Amino acid sequence: MGQYKTWAIVIKTLDYGESDRIVAFYTSDFGKVKGIAKGAKRSKRRFSNALELFTLSRLIFFDKKESGLARIEGCDIVNTFPAIREDIRKIAFGCYLVELVDEMTPEREANPDLFDMFKAFLSLLSDDEAEAQILRIFEIRLLSLLGYRPGLDRCLHCNGILEHGEPAHFSAQQGGLLCQRCSQGYYDLSVISPGTAKILQAAVEMDLSKIHRLKFSKQALWESETILSKFIQYHINKELKSKKFLKDLGM
Ligand SMILES: [Zn+2]
Image (cartoon, rainbow, N blue to C red; front, side, top):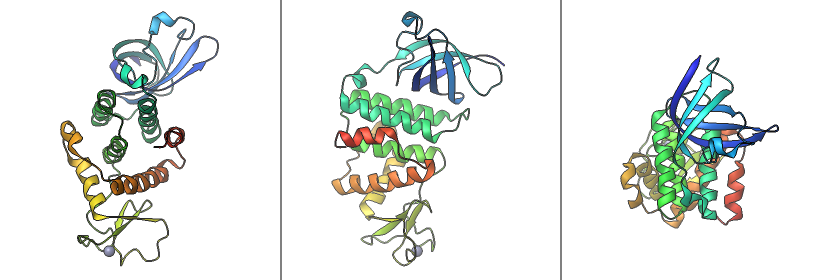
């Protein structure tokens, strides 16, 4: 019980009743935190843009039980990422990132590395072109930081190293690759070429500052979109709303 201060990014926001707002943040010290901002709807001045999607701030909140809904006391805005808000593609990308974080992370489970990665991707999206590969790199890194990194160099069953040129099969249920021989009898498989497996591994391991050097081929983009979507859907058990928004924009 007490008052806390932490770095926070707004991942969901909705009006509540006559004058309040309920906001979900992803924070550096507490993971996902949901809170109520009393009077935020009525008085725009108090919170300004601090409760809009994507905004990075120093959040001050009060908590009675360290669970449930916190009381949002204040937010000192650090960055609202205005460039994201000015471009429809970037908005769609940003909505996907925040929804993915919201759906994939449990409440009140700190993961500072995930917070840093999330913040870095919002900066990347703000500063660079909105290219589909950003989404794929974010997905595979998020999965890895949450402990779901798919095995992409060996067959999950026989542990055989996948030979160059041999296509493998990705199983969302098994969380990794199966070689041609071991893939018999599975029905949820997607084909993945060695090039795609390789670039996805690089996307996890590469330093974030060098990530713009990666260039996904059309095939790698298409294959990774298929397998990562299936894998994410397997974990959250539904399709993300923002995914439809991306599809409507042809992405
Ligand atoms: Zn095998």
